[in-house]
Image (cartoon, rainbow, N blue to C red; front, side, top):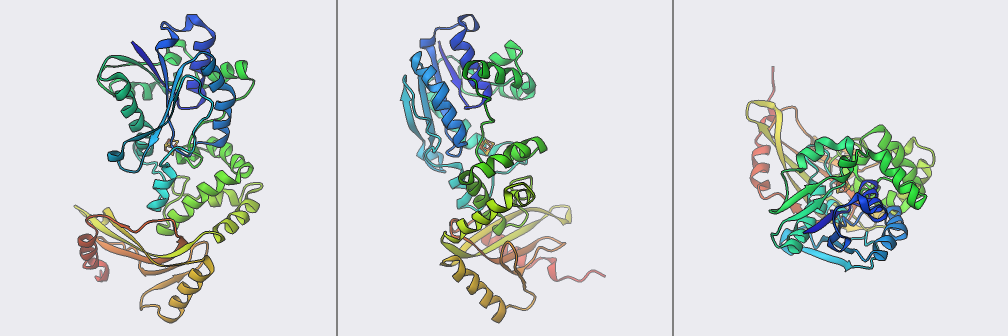
Length: 389
Ligand code: SF4
């Protein structure tokens, strides 16, 4: 029976590999039955890729373990997956992926959402691996090894009934009683490095806790490439919706302002933005009312359309001219980290429209929800003009 290890490039699954490959008694299968599968989101930390290439891949190559790296081909499942590598002698960790999660986020001017399930992970990791594993097993029984450790029993319980037909889940770290610290020591014993957290370099889940943020900020200051990727994504998302941000609705930009080395990094980031093509976007949101409470929004349909393009200075001047000479009655001009002309602002009562012209890097595509036109009509007729006595 095939034994398939989902290798997330982190300490947990790395520790499983080092133990299996160093202690024969730790496994009950032959290494020729083992396949290591990796889903590349396209946005993993450079450091992680370097460590995998330096320490893990040589070990896998030494034992001639089949190692397959895949990624999404596009934002549509219809386009399937791309095989980046399939070899028993892995050398390169293709962390650049194919269609990157960051491509998808930037195209629609948003950040991965932290409320509810990790949709980004299901799309960029879970789904490509399911497709690959289905191809490898053809519906036959297989052992699927996942690196949950002893602090992740809830995740293990949720994971157990999931997956493809024929899947027999296996959680070696929980069988061994290993927590993350023990995994890190196992790796340190072998490679003499402390394995960092693996994640997309902008992962909002990694920034959600104080400890996660404390780990991430020095990493950003030390690695402007990764910082600019995260900051650009956030900047664009906030331009489209001031309530966005990579730290649970708060902005990474603000956290870096108060961190040693952060202001210098942010000055360089502004220069980075200056070198990009820019646009003025017309961003509209049509809020529907909750069924039983007109002071609560049910959901919103959004439209984002590029109305002008050029360099940053031109776009700023153009919007400034519009705001100075053609500001409609009731509109508001806002200048700060973002430059906006608010045509409609969110109301206390729903349905209601929200509309702003905003300058931002020209990275988002024109896009509207299918239901937008109808929702917009309804929002414009909403109670925003009512006077409550
Ligand atoms: S690492 Fe974070 S951002 Fe990347 S796919 Fe996983 S949850 Fe989403």
